[in-house]
Amino acid sequence: MSKDYLLYGRDLIFREVHSAIQLTDRELTSVNQRPAISRINGRYRCERCGAAVRTKKPYPCICGGNCLYCSDCLILGKVRACDTLITLEEPNLFAPVHPASLRWIGCLSEEQRNASIEISRTIHANEERVVWAVTGAGKTEMLFEGVGKALDANKRVCIATPRVDVCLELAPRLRQAFPDTSLAVLYGSAEEKYTYTQLVIATTHQLLRFKEAFDVLIIDEIDAFPFYLNDMLYYAAAKAIKQQSSTIYLTATPDRLLKKRIKAKKIKASILPARYHGHPLPVPSLARLSSHASLKKIDSNCYQHMQELLNQKKRFLVFIPTIQLMEDVMKKLVILFSQFSFDSVHSKDSQRKEKVSKMRLGQYDFLVTTTILERGVTLSGIDVIVLMAEHRVYTEAALVQIAGRAGRSKEYPNGEVTFYCTNLTRGIKGAVREIKEMNRLASRKGLLK
Image (cartoon, rainbow, N blue to C red; front, side, top):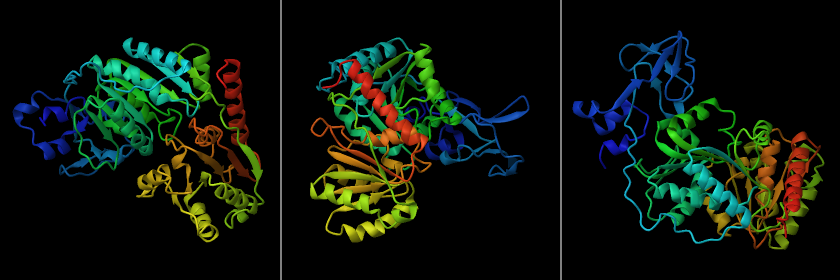
């Protein structure tokens, strides 16, 4: 691959690039360069992530002097005051696909079709749009037509999401829908080297490495950690798109501010309160835990519930708020359910990709998880159990998303969700209220079977 291809639309530290591909003096004359840390009104700012430099004094540096550095985007490598950021203007050098990029032949519901048309129009007009769709509404499929038309118009498209798991979930679906389009999947621990492609799937942190690269940016789960209320990632998204571009925001649980903007028509929105199969969202049942301490020993009601599901050959997810608590619970589960196949997964688990795949393929009877599987992962035919649902990690949005793991497939649309808790929190009440409200809205629109 040409050296230029590795720099088109990228925003990289010269020191790192030069050591990797050895740019000649002639090649450097065509590269756009700017200081990695700028000084504005007496204050220092990192040009890669937009954050104010927090270091108070210069530190001994590899350049031989003393330099400030940015502590906010260290995850992508240290940016020093002596560094230069380099990029090449994105030229959209993509081979045309005939007769069309999109090869997906599935069917959309009427509501999905309307949203798909609106998304296509927004992309064509270089505008912004929010797609507010309940979990399991089929947001990915609604994007296909708009993305396909953008690719056919020689535009470069990026789908960004806060979590690696969602990237891994999206990649095979996008490859199947656009088999003749070059595609790269970018995330922190990815083994494949970067290549210049027309379609990019990336974690939102990877947007920091781009500058005016994309004609279309689709940001999934805008309400989710780490993107939500993260100034650095908002800056990264704004930096990654061209001046003439479109941005599509996807969410199942918009915050109050976004809802107000939608209601005031300050941003265009496509609202889908029903799933593609026309069945209502599962409304969580509430069950009381005897105490937090007994949870480590497995509450008797919860144990009986799990046993009943296993006897009925139903598969399920068990959500537990922390890794430590999960480890305590797993010790007991291994004893109680030794005849069944199951495992646990969390954010620091190096085998989480393989474990989720096994659950998807039906090799586990159930899977115990933290909130790492709260979003973006689709498993068919499962029920959901949430232990200690009043824990602070379970926000209203998180509980809505967790409940949305059940009932996603048309073959098993009535999956059950149970919140086990010692008391009712604002998050629990809000999640149940939000789910019921979306079901009522879907019913009023005649979208439910």
